[in-house]
Length: 197
Image 1 (spheres, one colour):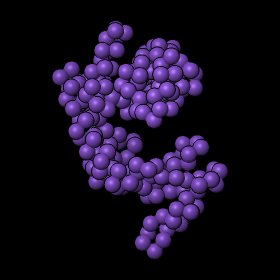
Image 2 (image 1 turned 90 degrees about the vertical axis):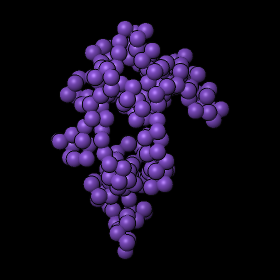
Image 3 (image 1 turned 30 degrees about the vertical axis):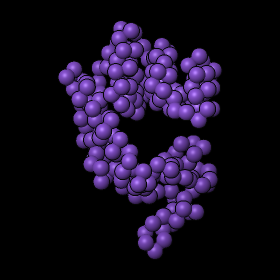
Image 4 (image 1 turned 60 degrees about the vertical axis):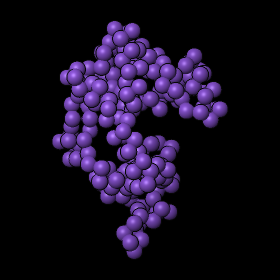
């Protein structure tokens, strides 16, 4: 989508790390909260987005990835954009049945150093070996390029996914209803190959 539209994809996690590393005013606030063991508040995240969209590569638009996640974040984003003379012009919902998400997420393994992603069914590493139950043997999961061990995120488990999906249905779905009257919400069947999506 980025290359097709010629606009950057902005991940709040990446922007947060970048703001902290660059020691921006908002980055310093975020760092203080994180060092104290707290969660970075919506005001800080919206501030990081506000700073980032001032960059030249955002002149013709940008894609927010994973934000907003709550109705309050959507409202804060709307208020910030209004001050900048902008509005949300598209909201894309990638529609996938919960049961399919479990298979996709619980089968995901990543190489921490590079961010390369693997999947036990769809994109297994060359080194993958399975036990008698057909499950991957963790010690066999190695990055194809470096041979370094792969890892699974702590929240890529069936139990964590149940909690994440509950949060999605309770907190994120209302965002779609918030933007739907503006005619900007598009639902895409993401339960198909990448070309179809």
